[in-house]
Length: 498
Ligand code: BES
Ligand code: MN
Ligand code: ZN
Image (cartoon, rainbow, N blue to C red; front, side):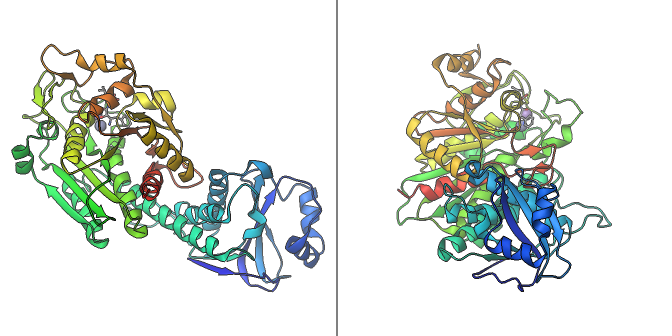
């Protein structure tokens, strides 16, 4: 994808020469001045007349009429110089890459120096570009007989830079790898429920494990019965598809210690069960395995980058449907942790399967647990599609996690876990826990329900119901699956090496 060169010359041939433009009125200098001279002052005139724009994320393309080797110039508006962050640079590159793909160009040449600012390292700026090249080229896989969308064309990016070649190369490669891991997640999440059953999800996970030489294990229904996984079994009752408890182990250390564990919700379709969801928009519930897919995307990145940490992935997976044997409101079940649960609402199924997921992760030696799930509609009310909601029982672990989220350029916001919220879970006359205590603090009680099966192991819960699946396109991809938290989880693992 990338080649790195130095000493850009005007005769360099390219379909698109990419130039970063900050919102400042300095006289043109350096390469831009040379290009302007070659074009008889056209750049200066176009800037003066507002045909080349400097506002953040404004992209202006200008034909050179073959006066230099580049056929076109693409100016990427970057806004105020002091405001450029990793996130903003990545999104601006994303807007550019989308436009370049729309123009069906296969190649572009980036003048990297024109994007440099003091506050951003070469590595991070390169990572922003690498990530954007992958993410903004992502295309939805559809099942139409006739291809009516142009393929993303961008295949080759030349980057000119006269400095720190190692940091540039590493940043581009790491960024691209992160993008590809995220796109892998997106493709799983976008897959329809009939084409991605728990069996299919397990097959995908096993293939990934084999590809990267990870250990794996897939528990079948009989194993779950033997072990006492009452949560996932209860949800699975209403489905004709067999449930799977999928386990991947990445060993980056000699001993299986300091194990970081990711537990992802793998509901391949959530109709709600007997507490049936309304028909409108229900098709989006094919995305209810978003947590599982994010875990797999992160494992893919980890498999590529091979950090020296131990990572355990656990994915409980089943459909949540209705048949004559389906779980009923009022049923009392026993989770793997031994705790009993009164199922007040069969649509609060994510927490039931995750209760077993986290308890099983503990049995397999998890020292730190992050669970991730499209868990509640309530988190969308609270945080919209902007930020992922989080809950934790451990300040230090959460600090480390937040640093990873900042580095990854993903928004996370923590919800409180005060004692009285726990009391809401203990409102069943019949069992230890109530799986659906009501609308108040819905995202918090859902998260704490999972935590109740973990006790003291450092734990972070991530609710991606608002962030995993978008109803509109962004600079980094089309509408549909976003691959939320994939990059954060991967960076968390990388930085875990202590
Ligand atoms: N999968 C849903 C949550 C969800 C909603 C994800 C919208 C993405 C978009 C989850 O299983 C669910 O149904 N949650 C219920 C819980 C309630 C019954 C306590 C909800 O949020 O309404
Ligand atoms: Mn549900
Ligand atoms: Zn669900």
